[in-house]
Length: 108
Image 1 (cartoon, helix red, strand yellow):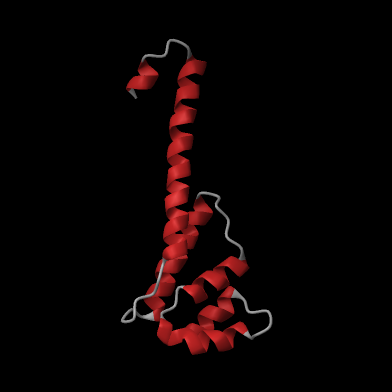
Image 2: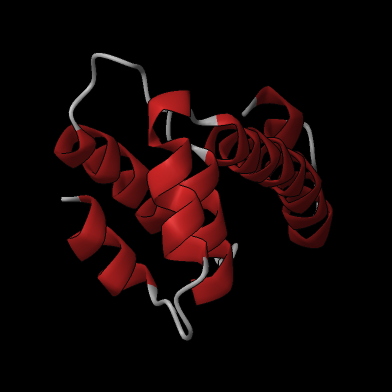
């Protein structure tokens, strides 16, 4: 807060705070999106645990207004599954109108 304490005018202090926190918000958003996009389920991890981690990241992205669509959800979760799910995921991709909730139901 030392950079704000040196400001003699409130609007100058306010501008400094905006610059500081917009930058931190952008970094946080970028890191969270990267974590979401690179998430991979481990071979020995349970599907339920992986879906829980996935959903937690989605909630964090939603909380910072970094919206993810249903199609993004479906695609991302399929992409995050380990190689031993490849055949099963391929069959799920052929389903018309596959929703995120139906994907979770099929995986669990």
